[in-house]
Length: 173
Image 1 (cartoon, rainbow, N blue to C red):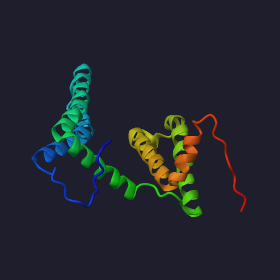
Image 2: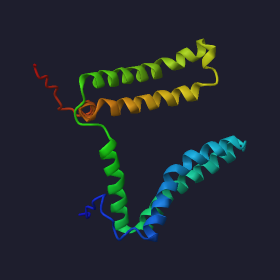
Image 3: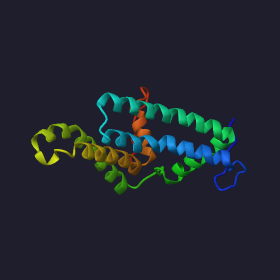
């Protein structure tokens, strides 16, 4: 079983191996979103751009394994506790109020409806021409933000959709 490390304690594993591994880990996560648009904008032929992009994505995956190997088990466990501790602290709360719930539900419905209707609207409305990707990314971000606004009880409801034996239980107030 992995050793639990408190986030607030200073660990002796914070040497050069951990720092190098954390840097490689960050490069493997943030490298492709930076490099892939750059490769496309440089004007390579489609086959060459696809090959370079494939190598970048494969290299990012391999870099992740190299980062874990450089950090070692203790370093990887410590980094994982840092990341999940941050997500736990700033992640969705367990219980949310009714205003926050309905706001998140409205955001979710708007993003799903916009994603469903957008391909049809783009052909009719000339103002959308050239902004299709930005609008699609905005809708996806709205969807993700709405799931955090809805809180972790909503995640349980969403998970119940994929569990065959799950049953809804309504509490009378």
